[in-house]
Length: 247
Picture (cartoon, rainbow, N blue to C red):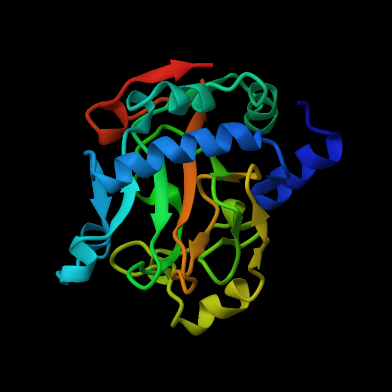
């Protein structure tokens, strides 16, 4: 696949791009089947809701938020992360050769009904350490749909290019929802109803969030990140501790 000029310009301006029906549904089902086994048996490494929000409640201890380091878990996961069809697209949005990062994201993400937590507004780059910000994440929908009922992603367009102040964020680097100064920007947020096989690309500096899962079923997605080849991880940081794969 190759992006049109309009799609390239949309990503550059807004910091995200939706690719409807990009992934094969059969492949999505196969990936999900393996992921569900790993979730059922809590195959490490994992992150629980308790670890993410820092609140020690029994229900959060038992709820897996994501399977980590999925590149090394199964050939199906690796095949998707090194998918040849998406490489031209990644090169277009990065404007240079893509390199697969395994230090960050590299995850199967879940939101369980009733015990999931809200993901507040944030930039992924808040806890990454690179010499530059030319990084893009690839989000794949594995379930039948993602919507406002089960915690679909929301984005603040153009926020990847905004010079936001430290005081607009809280101590955990979440963009403050309670700050009057932030409200006009938050009010511009957009989202989509997504279906299995849909892919969203989004910039590492783009503000995004996801609500709790209010539905009866588990939301499950796949996310990985690529960097432009010129953007190097900072030596000694977590971003430099894991292998990378040139695509």
